[in-house]
Image 1 (spheres, rainbow, N blue to C red):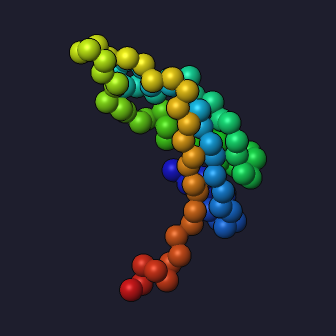
Image 2: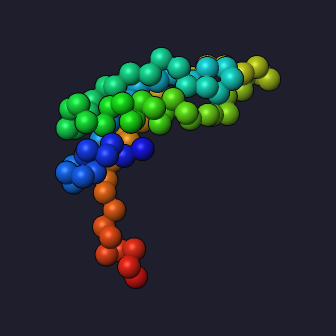
Image 3: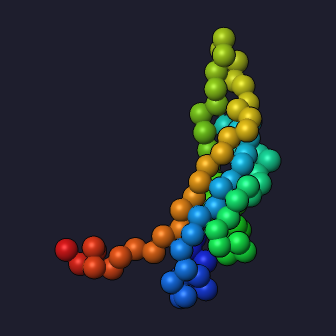
Length: 85
């Protein structure tokens, strides 16, 4: 969810999130590794990634955790003209 104050002010940015994926495919151990601008999008990024669900890695028929994953979430406002076409 785009933070309403950032949207109203036209602020865009990104957050780099670190996390692990457990044997069930759930995200665990979330942390913010980088954010621009700081203090704006971190909470929204963490809430989004916490909802992600993965198919776990299978080795010899056994589900394994995937540690040390990193994703970059971009927060960009849509160009309303592109939707008018």
